[in-house]
Amino acid sequence: MTDQSYEERRNALKPYRYLPLFYLLPDEIATARTLDTFPRNPYKVINDKHWHDFYHGKYFQSRLMDGWGWMMWQGLGIKGGVESYSIRDPFAVLVFSLPMWAALLAEMGIDTDLLAAYPPDKDIPFLTMKQAAYNVAGLANRFWEHPTLRMREIFEVVNSHRDFEDFSAVNSHVKTDFYRKWYHTRAKMKTESLHDDSGDAVYAPYIPNEFAEVELRIWFGGFLERLDEKDQKIIQLLEEGYTQEEIAKMLGYANQGGVSKRVKFIRGEFEKFRRE
Image (cartoon, rainbow, N blue to C red):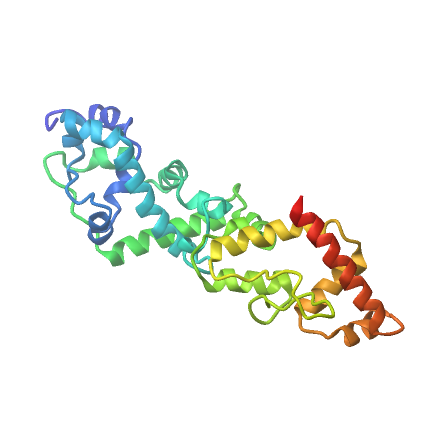
């Protein structure tokens, strides 16, 4: 390969579009993804069947994807670590997209043509974390300021329309903030909501398992859709800690008895829903 022309090396490297991404990983991240033994010379990858097959295998590309997803999430500056979000979240999907990062890097002049210009008889050294962070910052800026992608506008839409399924089962500040805004509460869901006269709770939306909590809240949302607007408001106010007497005044009932009747009705509807 050393006696080949630049054009020949350039053509030979074209099918390996993710190699530039690999050589931009710092040592620590490559080691953490067990990619530290992968050849530092791209021509060894081309000429050795083992490394050629390894490059095209799922393991290499998934490890590379994981490393770049982690780095780019930090670089994009999105609130909360990527582990706080599920694989359903649109921006979590984006950061693990190798084709997108390869394409954006190519627009910045970092592609297989650049590798072909590197001396073919020398290994490419690992980048330091500082160098890698500099490259990630430049790529993140390209991502946000791209003339056609309009990612800032897209992120604003995504960020303002998140739902429960966008978050992972991991406890995180961003998920807690989302829950509090969604339910208009200052703390975790109460277990005393919707009491009847006997003091028995109609339901207990908070349980310790975070993933199960999400499922329960989504399930309970199906029940709320069966109620009219005023009954939904009663539930909301009870969750926020208001007494039935206070709710009666807020919603225009003559006295607490009117709210108590609605709570009994809602309890009965909830039992029907749960049996169904």
